[in-house]
Image (cartoon, rainbow, N blue to C red; front, top):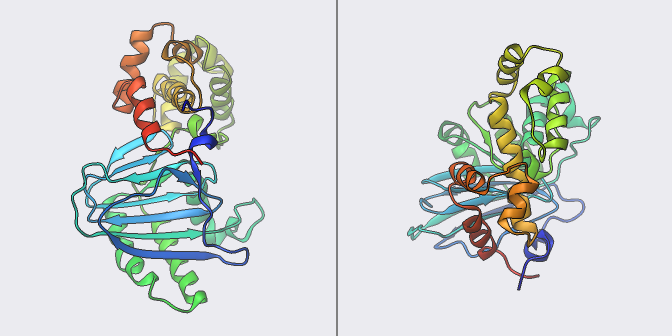
Length: 298
């Protein structure tokens, strides 16, 4: 059957969290991952150990994990899955915490004592993976979490875990902004203006002069300014935006690779294929085929 849209193929998980619940904690040992790609209407922190070789897919990010993996996802639409892939472990340990938090601008979490956690949860709308040193800082707390029978104390322990993670360096987002459909936010009004322009015109030929004029800067000064504020060059940022939209179309539509290439601002199919493979680790055709193998019709 040919795909029509994401929601025809992504399992929409009904979680055990009831309306008045805050946390659901699942601590399990298993030999393989069998659950299909899915999303759900709650946030999730997922810890996995002894699972080297498993392939983790979050949106348009696909990576093979090592012995330990810790990912936070706070998008209600972003699909994700941990696939068995080449993992041969006989004892995979997985701790999943599903939770509901209010991330509105006037919520308790937006206040100063929780500001770091609030910012991290917003960043995790694209999926956020933590480095090994961060995992080790919360390892014991994660192991203890499922054994706490008092709901209030479990919630406090979970807040402590989030607080530690929010103060760790090295966490990185997984899905691209355009794929995850995340609204672009930026402290600098100049950068925000340029990002919004790129996001609305990624399918067109984008000139550095046009972008620097939007920021009222010279091309050289703007290039430095953009990299300072985003950590990426202008060209790399444009590539990521275009490939995010391309990946979304590969997953959600039946459009040909050539059509997607041109719709995303590339006028040369071989160049598009080369850039896509360099950034995503596989050709567009392989990405589409591999991605759909993880899906089921529901």
